[in-house]
Amino acid sequence: MWCRKRTAAGVFVALWCLLAADLIQGQISAKGLRRLQQATVLIESGADRCSGVLISDVGLIATAAHGVDGATGRVRVRLADGRVQNASVLGRDEAGDTALLRLHRDADTGELACVPLRESGRELTVGMSVFAAGFPAREPPGNMAVLRAGVVKSAGAGVLRTTCQLTVGDSGGPLLDGEGRLAGMHRQIGAGAESNLHSTTAALRRLLLRASVESTELSALGNAVAIADAMQVGRPKDERVRPVMASLLRVVPAIEGELSGAERLWGWLVSERHLAVRLSAVDPGAAYAVKSGAEGLVRLQLQQCAYPLDLAIYELVDGKLGAGVQPIVWRDRPVQLFEQVHSVICKVGDDQIEVSAAGVVSRVHWNEPRVRPVLGAELEEVDLREGQRLRVRQTVPNSAAAGQLQTGDILGGVDGVVLKSRQQFAELLNQRQPGDVLRLDVLRGAQLRGIMLRLGWNPAEQFEKSEYLDGRSGPVSERRTGFAGVLQHDVPVDPSACPQVLVDWQGLPVGLTISRRAREATLAIPAMAVQRLVAGGE
Image (cartoon, rainbow, N blue to C red; front, side, top):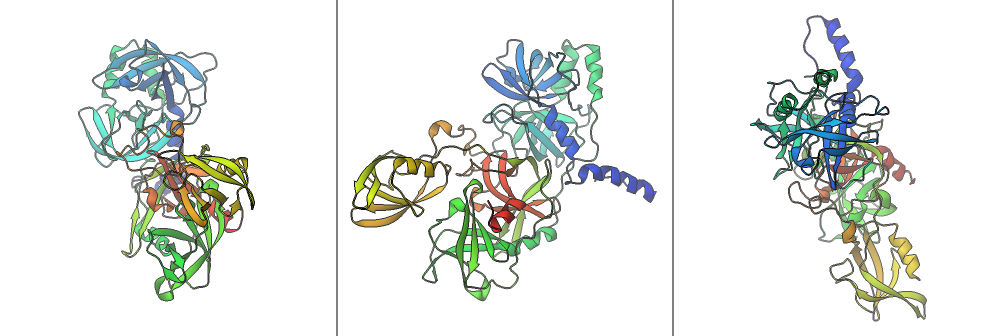
């Protein structure tokens, strides 16, 4: 409930107006989540990194005991504003996997954001909304903490189990209840998506009693003020989301007017005559079509390839869409930081929709760093009658080129661009990312053939094993780097079903989810960026 009933209508309206100031961007309190992000700290102990949370404005920090296990009494703490200061370990509770630190404040520390403890004796119950924050180990220091939303699955014996997506580096980070109070710290990545474990604050309270904490520090614990009744997540009503179904169309290869038996591919109608499809799932040189109802085949013409967004925009030609098909009606304002979002999967043929659990937008206008893709072929320049070309000398085992290219193959072009030098080819590859599809025109003997390759990763730049396909929360996307100007949220998605429509807490479409980058990080293209592409912009 957002607010309690009042006998006087005026009191009800006044209370609603106060809450609406925080809830205007969604059901989740932006103010409360901003405080959570600012109170979350990165702790460095030698080569180890973990997360923690400020619980008082005088510098007391709660974290996981196993996160500072190798500390010799002093650790480094990186605050949300980027400043790095030392801290001392005041005590550990190994059984409760909890540690208490004290920040060494200096004259430049300034005011510290902190979160209050949940009252002792008030246990979380199954189904309650919770919010997590932490610093994934793969990300470079300097990024803000990543937020996640979830619900409690079980509580007892000093341990909480939630649906919040945890990852390496999150250990010791905060878990907040719906009132914005600290309910626990992250303890362990669970065996399933709904089995992530957190320690309760019981061990932390024991540490506060027996550690060398001054009375002024204990009294400072009450200085943090929670946001009450403003951080409960909800779910958009099906009737609000159902119109999205009318925008999803199946895409098929078009060969002389016939349908070929290819893998299922879906596109979203983003205007009266334009379809958005995941670029890394199609061959830009092939012909595609959609089949809509009894109207027959509607051919598609490629209008634009947006590699920084992994999105292809096709124009519908030579045909008419069936009755009831309509383009997505986007929300008329952009997504804001800390909004609640959901991913929508439409099950065509079953007339069903599937709406994900709530997620939190942690980043907007986000540029995911670029990574150099790997072809896995050694090339040499040769002079032929047609001019200078590239010839394959050898391929690397287990690479993108292995089994596709052969020694002696002549590379005639890439996506229709004639290749003449290794430098030119390197420049073309630099425009792509691992996971992108590359179309090569290859002369093998006297036969010219088209070959499709999915560019690979440099093993030294691939995510850690625990981050990539670890089996505990589903697969991540093959294309997950080099995105520009996207949103990051924590809703798990099936990469093979991308793009998916992203909606707000009311069910209004706000973007297209395009890639699951990691366990807790999913990327979406804002509606405005999709509209720019349709209009012919970059």
